Amino acid sequence: MSDVWLVARREIAVRARTKGFLIGLVVSAVLVAALAFLPKLFGGNDSYAVGLVGSDSLRAAALPVATAQEVDLTFTPFRDEAAARTAVLAGDIDAAVVNDRTLLADGTVDRRLGVILQAAHTDTQTQERLRAAGLDPAKVTEAMRVPPLAEQSASPERGDSGVRAGIATLVVLLLFFLLISSVTSVAMGVVEEKGSRIVELLLTSIRPWQLLAGKILGLGVLGLINLVVVIAAGLGASLATGLASDLPSGMTGIVIGAVVWFLLGYAFFSVLAAGFGSLVSRQEEVSGVLTPLTTLLMAVYLVAFYAVTDPMGSLARVLSLVPPFSSMVMPVRMAASEVRLWEIAVAAVAMVAAVAVVLAIGARIYRRAVLRTGARLRITDVLR
Image (tube, rainbow, N blue to C red; front, side):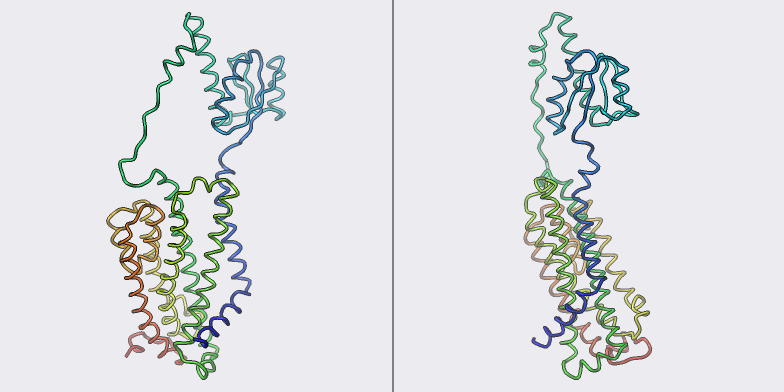
């Protein structure tokens, strides 16, 4: 194992210092963290300045509505409509209510502000009309204060399906891009060593399986670092923006599941990538030889993306137990819904067994093809 770890340390030391890895690490972390700030950026303003001309009764009705929506409202009285219009056009205030009849704004009233002011206007005008009709507004309000219907979900799933769907979408995108980049790096590394004939020197000191295991282990550690950094950036941004309170319970299990299934998926696809990569001697041929593998990876991604919309459907439930689809579909189901423990156990055992099978096949291809340079080799010839 010392030789395996020696190769892994070499891969980590060399790849971790490249600009591509560092830039990709920073960009992926920033993009995930930025997702937590999108609701803040596109959720509308949190404070508004409103002018009042005439009656001041709307202020008392608007403040409770604004407080309920976590909006800060400030009111400024104006002597007439002309002064209020000038302030709106100058940008000193966001809108102005004139004599409880007109709502002035520079263009269209902000949707959030408009809802608050319209609700307050309806409340004040309703109370005035009740008084004019000789009715007590307080008694009418009390009579109309009917408790809302209690909402209950008929399914066993929790009421946070929207948040869970968003997390599941992020999980499938993250796993796909990390897997495809890591798998490509493994294949490129194998072809680079084979084309430069460095592999011939390395294999004078260590066995082929040790070189292969060290390369996969080293690049896997880098992929795991990337995944952990991205998860930490996302959770940190959620805490900073206050979105952490909206995250569903069981986030620890979701995060651990994403890491474990990434490792299983990486082990499966990286071994095959190393085997396919050893069939060619030039990096220009890597994309062509990896076509069957990338096609399979794309199919897994599409099924996992579909599972986000229907995590309890028959297709998602069946393929979440079938390798290699389980490497993405199962963590998506775990993030989007409640998955029974026996399903997770069956999927994990099946995936480990599949990794063992491809490890035997991929290692055999790598051992027999990595020293054969020249024209592209065929898998059937190598296996024979």
